Image (cartoon, rainbow, N blue to C red):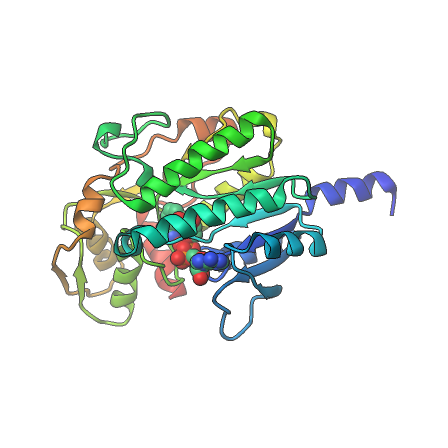
Length: 318
Ligand SMILES: NC(=O)c1ccc[n+]([C@@H]2O[C@H](COP(=O)([O-])OP(=O)(O)OC[C@H]3O[C@@H](n4cnc5c(N)ncnc54)[C@H](O)[C@@H]3O)[C@@H](O)[C@H]2O)c1
């Protein structure tokens, strides 16, 4: 192969380690990265059953920095996607564990990457960093943030730390504050899980009890749009990225009532009841709409799906 072409191919094709690959987002990222032509090494503390990922899988605990480094060196990893986390609703049941896992995983991945072949890390943040003080009607990228959940606290702490590491030039970390993600894969214990659960109930002709008030509006996104935005962010030159912290990212907004109306308009009968639980107060402290102008201007990205086409597409996949 011509050397210049070889260098070009090496630049385009990454050698990716995904940590926490067996969750709602991990599997979808595996497929997208493989399609891109990247080498993918998937890892988690939960082994997928059956192992049918289309790539190599290893057991890897993100709290074990030595093992992360060993995998990085053995597989000559150039990018890490760090998805290991305890999410918002689950995190309120185990706040101490949430801090230990979310911050432990964040720091271990950074420490295991510095001085190795790892060129960049993707670490997702969340709309959970925001609070009433952020101006919830339409939340801009840089606003006051006083997260109400331990999950949000860990995301904000990680954002501050990544900003420090980027500013110091220690390692290149990139991040997006994801809204609620709509996918056909199982959600992992977040406040926006109802969007997926409602689609599953509709498909199986079951009734659904919404943990959120019918009029609670939250930002959401088709998982394919979350993946396309992330891959674009991870493959642009660092100089195109105008911030050292995390980007806002939005697509559409919906409430349980609006979502059930969309589902009905697609020909499904969904019997819906409402029984608010502790997730309501979490949702009340989160944005209704996200201003992601900065991301769209820097990365030249826009979503492919709106609310209706998201529901339609995911219903087909469930
Ligand atoms: N899904 C969403 O709606 C959403 C929204 C905003 C941000 N995010 C963020 O995206 C990332 C992935 O989210 P997800 O929905 O796939 O979560 P998930 O809960 O479905 O998956 C997380 C995975 O991490 C693994 N994990 C937990 N502890 C680990 C450890 N010590 N070592 C290795 N793996 C470990 C779990 O086994 C699980 O497979 C998280 O950082 C989350 O905060 C997700």
